[in-house]
Length: 434
Image (tube, rainbow, N blue to C red; front, side, top):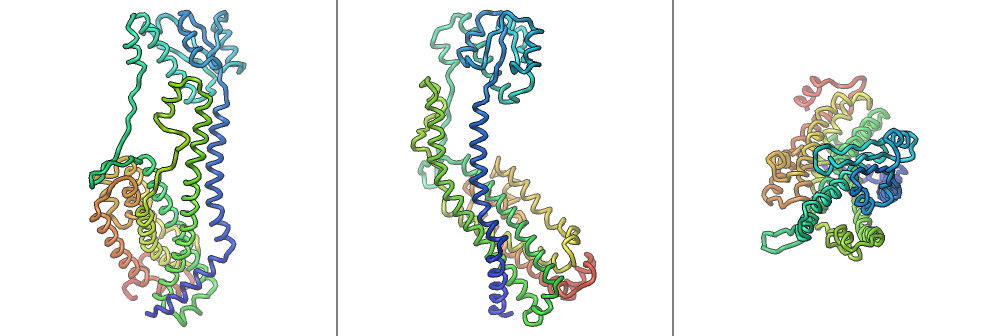
């Protein structure tokens, strides 16, 4: 096996594809798509916040409406002189979004409150009304019980939980578990998409070379194993180039997102006249200095390591599939055994998001075919023992050796086989003969 020949194939695969318009467009469009997505989310939230809903109130208690009106004078409007049929007509005519009829039994707890609406506002509106009603009914009950102001403050108060992370060295640091959970899931999804995406690219590349009979010319001067390794490394280098650009773009967006989020948060709070509401909304956060938590360099390094190893394990199998078929439509029967462990890892990742130290998460992170997706999620969320990380890497390297040996056997025979796609029985025969 010649390293020079492998490097020649690597260079050909890399340079041919990196200059293609499809690669350049895809590389640029992904970060732009991220910016557009963030902008759309912010735009939708602003647009939605401007939607004003009107709930008609018929207050037979003569005390609850005033409390509701103090909470939101635009949303709650009094219709004391109208009958229930008239209120229903207003809802059907879409002049109001719903109505409530409040009776004394609702304060005493003898009856349930009922909201009749057109369905506009969805769960968000229902949750808002439920919260407001709970508050005004509670306050009225406390007033009637003639309790002291101290008791009322106890009922109105809330508990804020601040979390700190204690390192093994005994130092306290900010607990960014929520943010890092999102980062871990994003990294897992990226590896999932990259393995399937670049693996599919390898399969199509092999099929294309077989169809155009280019492989016959290449195979006359390069050994199949050299061609296979060169192809995997070439497209792998292409993937790393693309991923590096995307990671740099993500970090740039993350750095810019902090000040932007702070400005947005400050603007939202500036409209609050009640200082107590501002304090409750901010929960101790100073919008002017709001920043995105730092992503450790080690996490990025682990991401690259597990991405490369995961890519190598699966790309060898994808190359074998390409050599065993004559058209892309014939690959479906072989994709199932490869896609099952990827999908299992994808599902375990969401369990890991909730409990990164569970038995399922630990075992899943040590199974080589699931490791790339599950382990990077665990590393992002929690402190994974170094021996587990080391063991998972060693197991993945050994698995790559096995898949590479298996794929080389199939590839050496399959690239020069034409006429029909091989069956599983024929693949076993090729492995034995290779």
